[in-house]
Length: 355
Image 1 (cartoon, rainbow, N blue to C red):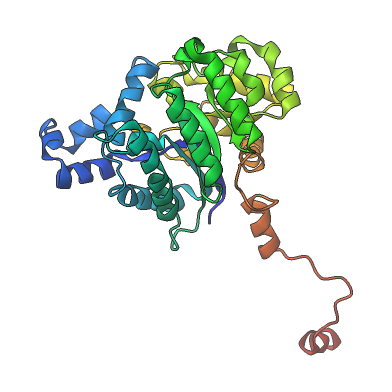
Image 2 (tube, rainbow, N blue to C red):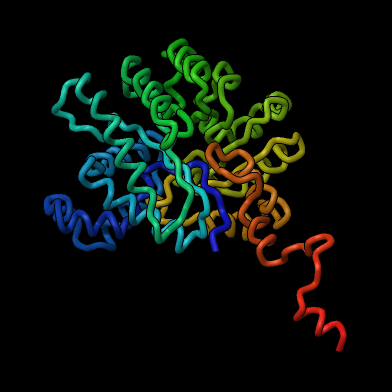
């Protein structure tokens, strides 16, 4: 029974350690030799990092093996796990297509190659035995020049059957030096009718109010209620949703205690700001979305009513969910159908009535 929506999950960080280790065993003996056994690799892969920058280095490891040839292998297993273990009905996968193209090619050749990546990800995400509604968010990146990021926006606009939005990633603390570029790129994305989200206000050094008006959703955004609660009124007015990824903030050292999120939820709910609970990098954390729910409940950060509100908000703010209701309501309609008005009784029912 698929019930949940995941709005913030990175393709690079979604490979669980067991799947990645299995791939390395078959294709990359040198990487396997660096660890005595799987347990050592899992501990290395999932351990907390001191900073977001250190944490993001692991993305590079996975991106190096996510190529046109290998993406179907990883995505099939990702979708299978999301359906069986997480009860996902809807999944938005975000990634930077340029970083999955061969490094030996020229910049222009790599830009041309990006369309193949989007096509492979799109086709590989449609798994008939695991019917999850999937879509892609293409990430501009702080490591890439303006020309490549502009090409990523163009690619998103050209592939709306697979792509639902654009994002910017790579560490929100370094946006400031290129702020005019990011604003121009987001203005362009909106002008061609694309949905927008962005990694922003995740860290104390990543607070850039200049970008907020250009976003439909805010990737993380926890520093807004923690440090700048006066902004919440405008966030609510614009109908923006925060994509909150609890385990990430402990793994990156952004928060010292997950219970600090209690203030995030309370201030957002008081201000009328929606929150979607997400995993961010389920593989790097070796967690599933229901674990994030349970963890928040266990630490008394939220209650069941607030959890339900967040789950409903995820579907309302999903960029490519094709239905007007969340799966629970659709399923309820199937299990408890309303009697049709003025419906004539069938002979069988009439017979039972007359007995």
